Image (cartoon, rainbow, N blue to C red; front, side):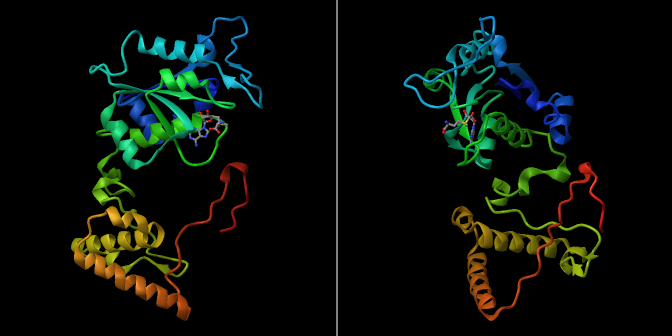
Length: 282
Ligand SMILES: C[S@@+](CC[C@H](N)C(=O)[O-])C[C@H]1O[C@@H](n2cnc3c(N)ncnc32)[C@H](O)[C@@H]1O
Protein backbone atom coordinates (compact mmCIF):
# COMPACT_ATOMS: atom_id res chain seq x y z
CA UNK A 1 0.00 0.00 0.00
CA UNK A 2 1.25 3.45 -0.83
CA UNK A 3 0.28 6.51 1.18
CA UNK A 4 0.78 10.07 -0.08
CA UNK A 5 0.27 13.05 2.18
CA UNK A 6 -0.39 16.56 0.93
CA UNK A 7 0.29 18.98 3.76
CA UNK A 8 1.52 22.46 4.53
CA UNK A 9 3.52 20.98 7.45
CA UNK A 10 5.67 18.20 5.97
CA UNK A 11 7.90 18.08 9.07
CA UNK A 12 4.86 17.15 11.16
CA UNK A 13 5.35 13.51 10.22
CA UNK A 14 9.00 13.28 11.22
CA UNK A 15 9.23 10.73 13.98
CA UNK A 16 5.61 9.63 13.82
CA UNK A 17 6.27 7.25 10.93
CA UNK A 18 9.68 6.16 12.19
CA UNK A 19 8.69 3.87 15.02
CA UNK A 20 7.45 0.37 15.68
CA UNK A 21 5.31 -1.47 13.21
CA UNK A 22 4.94 1.45 10.79
CA UNK A 23 8.70 1.80 10.58
CA UNK A 24 9.18 -1.93 10.06
CA UNK A 25 6.45 -2.06 7.39
CA UNK A 26 8.20 0.77 5.56
CA UNK A 27 11.57 -0.91 5.82
CA UNK A 28 10.17 -4.19 4.52
CA UNK A 29 8.46 -2.44 1.61
CA UNK A 30 4.95 -3.43 2.73
CA UNK A 31 3.99 0.23 2.74
CA UNK A 32 5.45 3.40 1.30
CA UNK A 33 4.76 6.85 2.76
CA UNK A 34 5.50 9.94 0.69
CA UNK A 35 5.09 13.40 2.15
CA UNK A 36 4.47 16.30 -0.21
CA UNK A 37 4.63 19.98 0.67
CA UNK A 38 1.49 21.63 -0.68
CA UNK A 39 3.53 24.81 -1.26
CA UNK A 40 5.57 23.03 -3.92
CA UNK A 41 2.43 22.93 -6.09
CA UNK A 42 2.01 26.73 -6.14
CA UNK A 43 3.10 29.05 -8.98
CA UNK A 44 3.56 32.33 -7.17
CA UNK A 45 6.76 33.68 -5.68
CA UNK A 46 5.47 33.44 -2.09
CA UNK A 47 4.04 29.93 -2.42
CA UNK A 48 0.67 31.01 -1.09
CA UNK A 49 -1.68 28.14 -0.28
CA UNK A 50 -4.50 29.96 1.53
CA UNK A 51 -6.73 32.98 1.16
CA UNK A 52 -9.61 34.79 2.88
CA UNK A 53 -13.10 33.30 2.57
CA UNK A 54 -15.49 34.78 0.03
CA UNK A 55 -18.42 36.36 1.88
CA UNK A 56 -16.23 37.37 4.81
CA UNK A 57 -15.83 35.75 8.16
CA UNK A 58 -12.99 34.46 10.31
CA UNK A 59 -9.99 32.43 9.27
CA UNK A 60 -8.39 31.37 6.03
CA UNK A 61 -9.26 28.68 3.51
CA UNK A 62 -6.85 26.41 1.61
CA UNK A 63 -6.94 27.39 -2.07
CA UNK A 64 -8.05 24.85 -4.68
CA UNK A 65 -5.20 25.24 -7.23
CA UNK A 66 -2.31 23.72 -5.23
CA UNK A 67 -4.51 20.87 -4.02
CA UNK A 68 -5.76 19.97 -7.52
CA UNK A 69 -2.24 20.36 -8.92
CA UNK A 70 -0.76 18.19 -6.14
CA UNK A 71 -3.26 15.36 -6.57
CA UNK A 72 -3.12 15.47 -10.38
CA UNK A 73 0.67 15.40 -10.28
CA UNK A 74 0.61 12.37 -7.98
CA UNK A 75 -1.90 10.58 -10.19
CA UNK A 76 0.25 11.33 -13.24
CA UNK A 77 -2.64 10.94 -15.66
CA UNK A 78 -4.12 7.84 -14.02
CA UNK A 79 -7.73 7.74 -12.91
CA UNK A 80 -8.43 6.87 -9.25
CA UNK A 81 -10.40 3.80 -10.38
CA UNK A 82 -7.49 2.37 -12.43
CA UNK A 83 -7.62 -1.38 -11.65
CA UNK A 84 -3.80 -1.51 -11.71
CA UNK A 85 -3.67 0.77 -8.71
CA UNK A 86 -7.08 1.54 -7.14
CA UNK A 87 -6.61 4.88 -5.44
CA UNK A 88 -8.69 6.89 -2.98
CA UNK A 89 -8.29 10.63 -2.77
CA UNK A 90 -9.05 11.21 0.87
CA UNK A 91 -9.94 14.50 2.49
CA UNK A 92 -9.60 14.47 6.26
CA UNK A 93 -12.53 16.48 7.56
CA UNK A 94 -14.76 16.49 10.63
CA UNK A 95 -17.67 16.40 8.16
CA UNK A 96 -16.65 13.03 6.72
CA UNK A 97 -17.70 9.48 7.42
CA UNK A 98 -16.59 8.56 10.93
CA UNK A 99 -13.56 6.25 10.81
CA UNK A 100 -13.67 2.92 12.61
CA UNK A 101 -12.19 -0.58 12.36
CA UNK A 102 -14.59 -1.60 9.62
CA UNK A 103 -13.64 1.45 7.57
CA UNK A 104 -9.96 0.66 8.13
CA UNK A 105 -10.52 -2.87 6.82
CA UNK A 106 -12.45 -1.54 3.82
CA UNK A 107 -9.59 0.77 2.87
CA UNK A 108 -6.96 -1.93 3.45
CA UNK A 109 -8.75 -4.35 1.13
CA UNK A 110 -10.14 -1.93 -1.44
CA UNK A 111 -7.16 0.23 -2.36
CA UNK A 112 -3.49 0.07 -3.23
CA UNK A 113 -2.92 3.77 -2.79
CA UNK A 114 -4.38 6.45 -0.52
CA UNK A 115 -3.71 10.12 -1.21
CA UNK A 116 -4.49 12.25 1.85
CA UNK A 117 -5.32 15.94 1.71
CA UNK A 118 -4.62 17.45 5.13
CA UNK A 119 -6.78 20.50 5.74
CA UNK A 120 -5.84 23.45 7.93
CA UNK A 121 -7.42 26.74 9.04
CA UNK A 122 -11.16 26.79 8.19
CA UNK A 123 -10.66 23.86 5.82
CA UNK A 124 -10.33 23.52 2.05
CA UNK A 125 -12.17 25.26 -0.79
CA UNK A 126 -15.43 23.34 -1.30
CA UNK A 127 -14.61 22.68 -4.98
CA UNK A 128 -11.98 20.24 -3.75
CA UNK A 129 -14.75 18.33 -1.98
CA UNK A 130 -17.10 18.50 -4.95
CA UNK A 131 -14.73 17.71 -7.82
CA UNK A 132 -11.59 15.99 -6.53
CA UNK A 133 -11.92 13.85 -3.43
CA UNK A 134 -13.38 10.36 -3.49
CA UNK A 135 -13.54 9.80 0.28
CA UNK A 136 -14.15 12.17 3.19
CA UNK A 137 -12.99 10.77 6.51
CA UNK A 138 -13.50 12.08 10.02
CA UNK A 139 -11.68 10.62 13.02
CA UNK A 140 -14.48 11.62 15.37
CA UNK A 141 -16.96 14.28 16.33
CA UNK A 142 -14.47 16.88 17.47
CA UNK A 143 -12.45 19.51 15.64
CA UNK A 144 -8.65 19.40 15.39
CA UNK A 145 -6.33 22.07 14.05
CA UNK A 146 -5.33 20.06 11.00
CA UNK A 147 -5.70 16.87 9.00
CA UNK A 148 -2.17 15.57 9.73
CA UNK A 149 -3.03 13.69 12.94
CA UNK A 150 -6.18 12.17 11.40
CA UNK A 151 -4.12 11.03 8.39
CA UNK A 152 -1.64 9.34 10.70
CA UNK A 153 -4.47 7.60 12.52
CA UNK A 154 -5.85 6.22 9.27
CA UNK A 155 -2.39 5.14 8.03
CA UNK A 156 -1.67 3.36 11.32
CA UNK A 157 -5.01 1.55 11.51
CA UNK A 158 -4.91 0.50 7.83
CA UNK A 159 -1.27 -0.61 7.89
CA UNK A 160 -1.70 -3.08 10.74
CA UNK A 161 -4.46 -4.80 8.76
CA UNK A 162 -2.31 -5.38 5.68
CA UNK A 163 -1.17 -8.97 5.07
CA UNK A 164 1.94 -10.00 7.04
CA UNK A 165 2.45 -6.59 8.66
CA UNK A 166 1.73 -7.91 12.16
CA UNK A 167 3.59 -10.94 13.44
CA UNK A 168 1.34 -13.82 14.44
CA UNK A 169 1.86 -12.97 18.11
CA UNK A 170 0.31 -9.60 17.54
CA UNK A 171 -2.39 -10.69 15.13
CA UNK A 172 -5.27 -8.28 14.73
CA UNK A 173 -7.85 -11.06 14.59
CA UNK A 174 -8.89 -10.78 18.25
CA UNK A 175 -8.52 -7.03 18.58
CA UNK A 176 -11.43 -4.97 19.75
CA UNK A 177 -14.01 -4.44 16.97
CA UNK A 178 -12.31 -7.00 14.70
CA UNK A 179 -14.48 -9.38 12.66
CA UNK A 180 -12.57 -12.31 14.17
CA UNK A 181 -13.74 -11.17 17.59
CA UNK A 182 -17.24 -10.62 16.19
CA UNK A 183 -17.01 -6.92 16.89
CA UNK A 184 -16.61 -7.40 20.65
CA UNK A 185 -14.06 -5.58 22.77
CA UNK A 186 -10.83 -7.47 23.34
CA UNK A 187 -10.46 -9.61 26.48
CA UNK A 188 -8.17 -8.34 29.29
CA UNK A 189 -4.46 -9.11 29.05
CA UNK A 190 -2.04 -9.87 31.90
CA UNK A 191 1.67 -10.56 32.09
CA UNK A 192 4.28 -11.36 34.80
CA UNK A 193 4.39 -11.00 37.74
CA UNK A 194 1.45 -13.23 38.63
CA UNK A 195 0.94 -11.11 41.72
CA UNK A 196 1.53 -7.37 41.82
CA UNK A 197 0.76 -5.27 44.90
CA UNK A 198 -1.59 -7.98 46.10
CA UNK A 199 -3.53 -8.12 42.81
CA UNK A 200 -3.42 -11.63 41.41
CA UNK A 201 -3.82 -12.60 37.79
CA UNK A 202 -6.92 -14.80 37.27
CA UNK A 203 -5.82 -18.33 38.21
CA UNK A 204 -7.24 -19.86 35.03
CA UNK A 205 -4.65 -17.98 32.95
CA UNK A 206 -1.71 -19.61 34.72
CA UNK A 207 -3.19 -23.09 34.86
CA UNK A 208 -2.05 -24.04 31.32
CA UNK A 209 -5.46 -25.40 30.26
CA UNK A 210 -6.00 -23.91 26.79
CA UNK A 211 -9.70 -24.76 26.63
CA UNK A 212 -10.40 -23.10 29.96
CA UNK A 213 -8.32 -20.06 28.97
CA UNK A 214 -10.28 -19.68 25.73
CA UNK A 215 -13.57 -19.95 27.63
CA UNK A 216 -12.46 -17.39 30.21
CA UNK A 217 -11.30 -14.98 27.49
CA UNK A 218 -14.56 -15.24 25.60
CA UNK A 219 -16.58 -14.53 28.74
CA UNK A 220 -14.25 -11.71 29.77
CA UNK A 221 -14.65 -10.10 26.33
CA UNK A 222 -18.42 -10.46 26.54
CA UNK A 223 -18.47 -8.98 30.02
CA UNK A 224 -16.27 -6.04 29.09
CA UNK A 225 -18.35 -5.33 25.99
CA UNK A 226 -21.55 -5.45 28.01
CA UNK A 227 -20.12 -3.08 30.61
CA UNK A 228 -18.56 -0.56 28.26
CA UNK A 229 -20.13 -0.81 24.82
CA UNK A 230 -23.39 -2.78 25.16
CA UNK A 231 -24.58 -1.58 21.75
CA UNK A 232 -21.88 -3.72 20.09
CA UNK A 233 -23.53 -6.89 21.41
CA UNK A 234 -26.54 -6.44 19.16
CA UNK A 235 -24.46 -7.14 16.03
CA UNK A 236 -22.39 -9.96 17.57
CA UNK A 237 -23.36 -13.56 16.92
CA UNK A 238 -23.71 -14.95 20.44
CA UNK A 239 -25.04 -18.33 21.42
CA UNK A 240 -28.26 -18.57 23.42
CA UNK A 241 -26.17 -19.70 26.39
CA UNK A 242 -23.96 -16.62 26.12
CA UNK A 243 -26.93 -14.28 25.91
CA UNK A 244 -28.54 -15.80 28.97
CA UNK A 245 -25.19 -15.71 30.83
CA UNK A 246 -24.96 -11.97 30.04
CA UNK A 247 -28.51 -11.39 31.27
CA UNK A 248 -27.72 -13.14 34.55
CA UNK A 249 -24.46 -11.20 34.82
CA UNK A 250 -26.28 -7.92 34.28
CA UNK A 251 -28.71 -8.76 37.09
CA UNK A 252 -25.83 -9.73 39.36
CA UNK A 253 -23.90 -6.51 38.64
CA UNK A 254 -26.95 -4.36 39.39
CA UNK A 255 -27.44 -6.20 42.67
CA UNK A 256 -23.75 -5.78 43.57
CA UNK A 257 -23.82 -2.04 43.04
CA UNK A 258 -26.88 -1.71 45.30
CA UNK A 259 -25.34 -3.86 48.02
CA UNK A 260 -22.02 -2.01 47.72
CA UNK A 261 -19.84 -5.00 46.83
CA UNK A 262 -17.10 -4.20 44.35
CA UNK A 263 -15.86 -5.65 41.09
CA UNK A 264 -12.17 -6.64 40.99
CA UNK A 265 -9.92 -3.57 40.81
CA UNK A 266 -8.75 -2.31 37.42
CA UNK A 267 -5.14 -3.06 36.55
CA UNK A 268 -4.16 -0.03 34.52
CA UNK A 269 -0.84 1.48 35.56
CA UNK A 270 -0.01 5.07 36.33
CA UNK A 271 1.66 6.90 33.50
CA UNK A 272 4.94 8.63 34.23
CA UNK A 273 6.61 10.91 31.72
CA UNK A 274 10.18 9.64 31.93
CA UNK A 275 11.48 11.93 29.18
CA UNK A 276 11.32 14.99 31.42
CA UNK A 277 13.23 13.26 34.18
CA UNK A 278 10.57 12.91 36.86
CA UNK A 279 12.01 11.17 39.93
CA UNK A 280 10.99 7.51 40.05
CA UNK A 281 8.97 6.89 43.21
CA UNK A 282 8.27 3.19 42.93
C1 LIG B 1 -10.05 23.59 12.20
S1 LIG B 1 -10.41 22.27 11.11
C2 LIG B 1 -11.68 22.97 10.09
C3 LIG B 1 -13.03 22.66 10.62
C4 LIG B 1 -14.15 23.14 9.73
N1 LIG B 1 -14.24 24.58 9.74
C5 LIG B 1 -15.44 22.55 10.23
O1 LIG B 1 -15.98 23.06 11.21
O2 LIG B 1 -15.91 21.53 9.66
C6 LIG B 1 -9.01 22.26 10.07
C7 LIG B 1 -8.71 20.93 9.40
O3 LIG B 1 -8.43 19.96 10.38
C8 LIG B 1 -8.81 18.68 9.92
N2 LIG B 1 -9.71 18.09 10.92
C9 LIG B 1 -10.18 18.69 12.04
N3 LIG B 1 -10.95 17.86 12.75
C10 LIG B 1 -10.98 16.69 12.09
C11 LIG B 1 -11.63 15.45 12.31
N4 LIG B 1 -12.41 15.24 13.37
N5 LIG B 1 -11.43 14.47 11.42
C12 LIG B 1 -10.66 14.65 10.34
N6 LIG B 1 -10.03 15.82 10.06
C13 LIG B 1 -10.19 16.82 10.92
C14 LIG B 1 -9.47 18.86 8.57
O4 LIG B 1 -8.51 18.55 7.58
C15 LIG B 1 -9.82 20.34 8.58
O5 LIG B 1 -9.86 20.88 7.28
